[in-house]
Amino acid sequence: MPGNSTITVHADREIHPSRAVALPIYQTATFWAEDGDTFAQGAVEPRGKDFYTRFGNPNHAQVAAVVAELEGTEAAMVTASGMAALTTAVLALVSAGDHVIGQKSTYGGTGSVLLNLLPRLGVSTTLVERRGDATVHEMPKKRPRRRRPRPRRRRRPRKGPG
Image 1 (cartoon, rainbow, N blue to C red):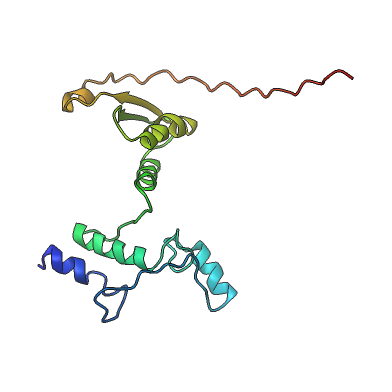
Image 2: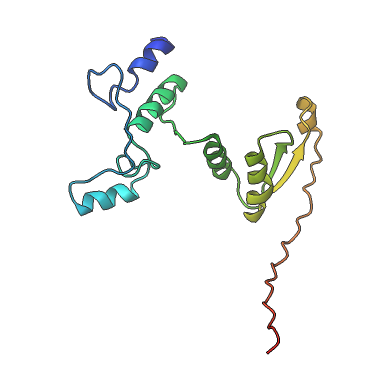
């Protein structure tokens, strides 16, 4: 079996069948298509490549192929940021009615996802101090009571005199 160095250099050969040692960095945001039907198909294709850079481009495909090979998986997903990776993973794994136990000491954006986004989707969250494995196992099995969100009241502008 080849080592990680070899895999890193050669795992993307099927993605970019060229002899280039260092493949170019694609700095484009959009891509063209032969016709409207082909473009429309690219817009709805899962993991669409060569459509819009946020959905994937040749560099994303290259990195994903290498990571998948290194990890021994069928496929890998590349995101633009750690928060995109975290949000994608959490939203893929939780459903309304679930309870997430998170760590208190974490990146602020992570706390925002756990405490602000997930409750809007019906997922409750408890943040704990992480001081060893016992903390998570000692958490109460009972889920916290859910509070129903209070409807926001909009203030009506007051009419001035006259």
